[in-house]
Length: 272
Image (tube, rainbow, N blue to C red):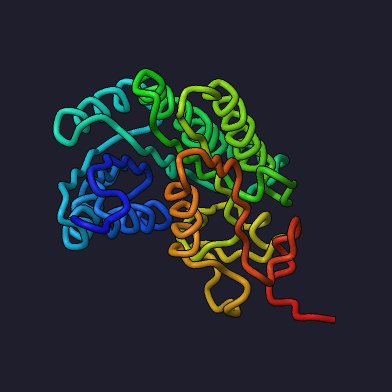
């Protein structure tokens, strides 16, 4: 374990069954952390757990958790503490995103409710489960994965934009409460990333308006400079986590070099 920067640390990653969450869990494992991967899809979690174990000499744990349920989060975090120890690092990566139009409300209500439940309520539930203990121990780091949508307005994403703005403001407020406690809070704001985040879109009108294909991975066929890899976001998280204890990396905005900030429809239009 010598030389591993997170050896002995207990890390919890939500939304870890795929995408950015999986990438962050693997990055933690490479640095020797004991990693608990959390999500709702048990079969995928076991696969990620096996990947984590292959990279780290430390213990790993798969926890089936619904972040929307306070009871599920509470029991899941208790299981982590029983098997791995007190939580040193929490990454809230569970999230959903649906392109939709407000005028198509009848078809989109369930998606909007899920967006608010997962992105907002889920973040609060998980932070509340570990924050008090971190303050008592005067150590710990919470990383909330929001979005560049927290900083600007993207078309056909009214509810998603608002949910990520909530995460950004919540993170700032939590950070203010943590001043003087030794606990750090970081808000990481990715732009377009090659994941299946929007694969379940159903509002064809909204998808057509922003040029997103329904049922397709983000960035399919895109130029190299138009989309991040999950490893790029994981690297941003690692930068914040591995910074010296007296350094607070409060916000990290990380976008593809060719993504025009505030206009997702600009992908692949080329230069004028």
